[in-house]
Image (cartoon, rainbow over all chains, first blue to last red; front, side, top):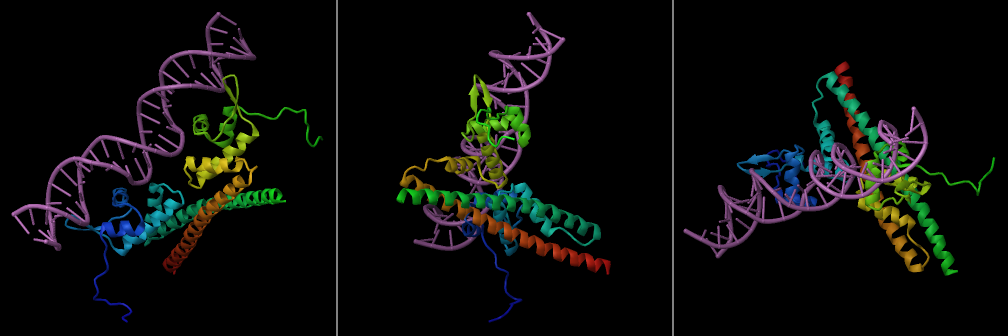
Length: 134
Length: 134
DNA sequence: GTATTGCTTTACGTTTACGTCAACGTCAAG
DNA sequence: CTTGACGTTGACGTAAACGTAAAGCAATAC
């Protein structure tokens, strides 16, 4: 069992393959490309997707589940790939990270609140049910 | 200091008042009414908002911050006001609560993942920065 | 060869969540 | 009484996130 086979071709996927795997349509995948969220290789006219594209796609979809607009998602995943060679670039990235965290933590507070309320509501319902049962 | 003054008029608000207080436009508030998310009292042609409407509005806005579509938000807040007199109704509501919780917990997992990744990324950036500084 | 399968681009359609006039009612202030 | 300030109902506009044909290339299947 070879740890890493340097001669092996890096695995690639077709648009139909990743679309199906991620549970979206190929139209959706191409839309993300139009917005610059993924940039698959081109072999002639065909799109070839690499692991990098899969990583990005899963980031995009998680962002969507969290309710972020695609444009904002792009700034986020671009952040992860941004050049960080110079000090000024690194400091910019660190500032962006802070903004992101503030946003995410706000969401988590909202989420926790919603879950707490839901729990309280369930309790009330269960009490009502118990009263009905006697 | 009266605990509860039964003779006191319940406090009400105008559309401009709640719009400004919640940081949205009156157009937005009326849009939520069009979708049946809030149903203010009508005094003639004017809308009169009560505490109940404010509660709903804050639920709506939190739902929006969490990225829920308005139609889904309506089913959620309607759930809180749903009749629960009969056993079958209560059991339906409890089932809905379970669905909601599943959804919210999924979101929380996504959110925690995103925050963890962000932390790891920040660490890497800080290491890079330290290397630049020597 | 041609028929099918899979991928491509182009382009218009749709839904959601409002923004943005337009045109009009109403009520207190001057 | 008319002028604002504030409110109202349409109704059309728009941006985002795709859906949905339409029409064509390209390789394999028979």
